Amino acid sequence: MKLVKLLANLGYGSRKEVQRLIRSGAVTDAGGNVLGENDLPPHAQIRFRGEELDPPFPLIIMLNKPDGYTCSSEDPGSTIYDLLPERYAHRNPGLNPIGRLDKDTTGFLLMTDDGKLLHQIIHPKSNCLKVYQATLDRPLAGHEGELFASGTLVLNSESRPLLPAALEVLGEKEARITLHEGRYHQVRRMFAAAGNHVLSLKRISIGGLQMPADLGEGEWRPLTREELARVFP
Image (cartoon, rainbow, N blue to C red):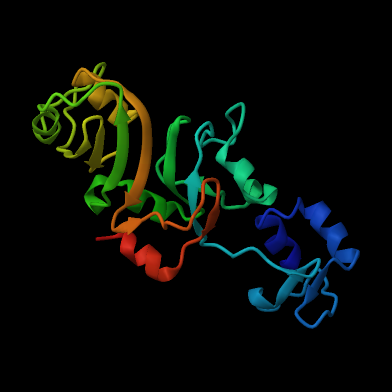
């Protein structure tokens, strides 16, 4: 059952479905030899219908999230899991976003099946800053930078002040915002508190890692060890 458990945990099917696949000869080693249910060669040597297996646990991927996709497999409509192979939604442990992006927020998203790593990245004490680029409905008034950096801004319906955030003016209606935390609709609510409205919002970096310029909208790939190290400052 060793091979059955591995393939089921990677999302290739239920245990019964995987057993049938193995018995049909769909799983081989790199040399083309058919594997049995109790075989378990090194991960890199296993082939499913001639293709290498998906990466084992722990897996972390980067995704360039398009507009209109939600970050939960339970939400109606299009989700980020639609951009991945279908089996990725059935991995065990599950593959989850590291800090969700709103449906109408685009850009850099990390996902992992490592719960400890997920919490390490999102916890404010990790100092993994999140940087967003916002396009606004109206020109900046000039007071936003001081307001966001004050550490005293309390959002509507909340009682705890936001941690200080940095604002970089990019244009009359364009700004870059660096956050130390990630509250619900935070950037949009910050600008609403300043009397403005966010038309579009894109996350461009997490910690010390920027989204690669060659990662197109809707595209994804596994993170390298070197890239993961850059997430933590």
